[in-house]
Image 1 (cartoon, helix red, strand yellow):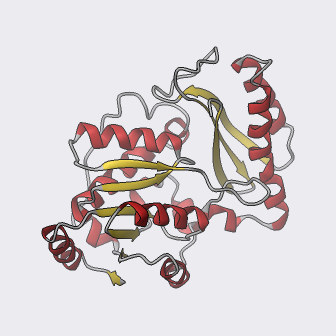
Image 2 (cartoon, helix red, strand yellow):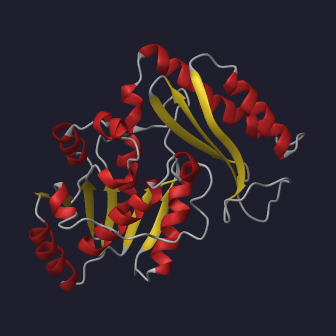
Length: 281
């Protein structure tokens, strides 16, 4: 198990591993690790010879400077957690290692970025695509692992990977939840004790919404969730959308031919949280 800080050393290690015929799996993270991240690492270890984890808080995907400054950073704790998973390499670069020159690339996501997260966080997905494609160039993985909690991001990264012909399989992994249902997130640690209780309104609303599917239309379910969140003290709803899992477009009827996903984003105090649920599973 090795921690690498320089791009040049990473390239050397990766080159030797690929030349020896090893399969490389990759888990990109921004640190502040929790069980959700560790589950990605375990999936990766099961399916590859070598597991590479990156820890890098990407400034290009934050459209709010305050949010970037408040993002939790705890590298020593992160490394201690990763040791329990048996990773092979951890890449912990500084900004200049990832972006030796400013990244001015602008990506075309075919409209996948114009709703939900993209609408509320302009430029966010372009920054995500910049860092992920840069890391793909450095790590050269055969497979890369992402959590389904960031559902829209996953769809966009699949498109970018396909459009740019990266020989990388994007592997999606299930949402990991706390015992009370709250989706695990690095941002949860920024919540006060009272805010943590209020944040449960997101997951509880999603669970109720799925139970309503049998007798209610998507529009009725959307109205219910919107009303419940708007009436929850200390929770400021940004959006709740019920979308086609492939196109990300809103749906008006339940269609079991492919996944229908309910996606939500809200602020609890100063902390922005997202979650989703699959109505088709």
